[in-house]
Length: 89
Ligand SMILES: [Zn+2]
Image 1 (cartoon, rainbow, N blue to C red):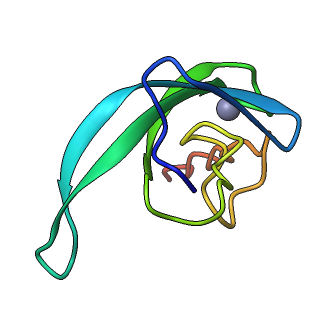
Image 2 (image 1 turned 180 degrees about the horizontal axis):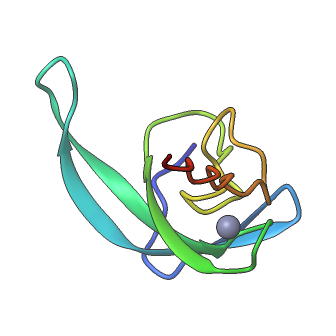
């Protein structure tokens, strides 16, 4: 994909993303690059969040959910079970 401009708006999967800036980034191979910082709203909870995305990938397929809801393997809405306190004799 072409490098985005600041304040550029993109639509992906029906969701609106706004480029709010850029961050310098060093890749695993030690290469200096720039990541675009995008702002959107979580598809799950509607909370606004920012995330960084490469400006050099061909396809713009960003996360649709905030960090809390994008965690793999974690179901949305699952609550931690409270352990029943052990009875002392
Ligand atoms: Zn969320």
